[in-house]
Length: 276
Image 1 (cartoon, rainbow, N blue to C red):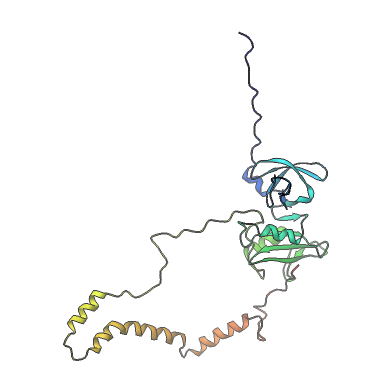
Image 2: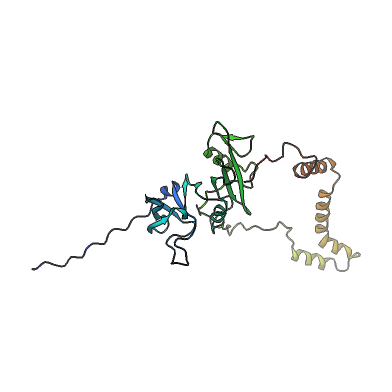
């Protein structure tokens, strides 16, 4: 028979990067590209890209979320190292990225300081985005508070990921990780309820029936309500009792922690941090 028609096989699709690659260096998209006013964006703000090649002011990159491959200008992206060290963005863009949806409280990034050349800034999402200046000593050690220095930025990140130590909160995940955990579902067999005394109405009615014709009907009321009254009085006395030592101790601890108190102790004072 004659030559048969053979269809040309479609080129294989480029596989998406593995999960291990998500933690390495990447490009962070700072704004939708192209602008929605021009055409539907190829890459969107907050998207993470893997570099294919540097085209001199342009990057050829592939999206880690969609697998789409295209070119993007260098002014629309920031280089990211170690997952949290951002290069090429300012304070405003840092706040925009840290306020994207699904960004957890404690998400953070370290970036070059705009106000102090040669220094870095730690930007953290809390109730609002907070910025802390990271100083560098002549021996290239780093610190946010002078009382605690670190040999490298990674040690600094590891420390504040374990304890806030004066920051607005503990560092949780690098910016753009977007791995917010789903709300925890409580077990149906262990609901959270208020602790209260179980009241037996059958027993109360039986006592009321047995007490008919008694000399003092007040005894019935006492059997029904005296328990709750006694509990209330006991709770009140436990809060306003004569234990002056415990009261003074509580009052003292509050005054020490209060930042405006003249009696503030140096043990509870926050380390001097500089907002950037």
